[in-house]
Image (tube, rainbow, N blue to C red):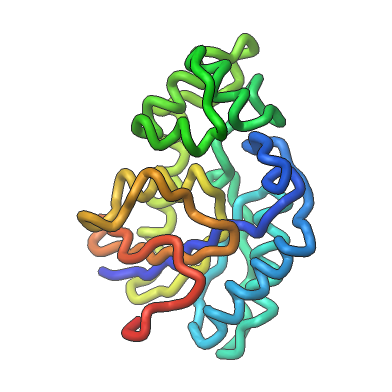
Length: 221
């Protein structure tokens, strides 16, 4: 039982450009973000996709549409929208400058949220964010991973041999890397760039991420 899932991070948004926290809040793709999505689609153009999934947030849906526009093989799959692959809810920190958000969480200054995120596992980051949210909306690690794993379970139940496009988000992808990356593949200091491609294979319901943060496919893929 084997399923290939090509995971694309959405293109750059206005909030990405401004270094703002972006979880369940949404922002449109910039021109560069649309270019990110189109470039990812061109890199995947020769892959025959049996299924296509996207987070329900508009930045992911628009990216998925632009990727699918570039495909050259077979019938275009219907885009399936799923809340299970939505980005993490950041609660009170939504829209906050990344470095300032890290300082709110830890009480220590950071130049960026990425600089903070590489100091500890994402599981701990999520729990700290949830603990600091006075509105109790931010997802803790347990709730977030439960949701994502429900999505992975859905993918694992697709027909054997399926090839899937999935457009999702930076923290979703980082969490998949922490959970399922092949040894030595993931450096927590390097977040997935907008429009990059990851490959996850699900064999007998067990996911393994084969490559990460690529703008093109490996020659042997």
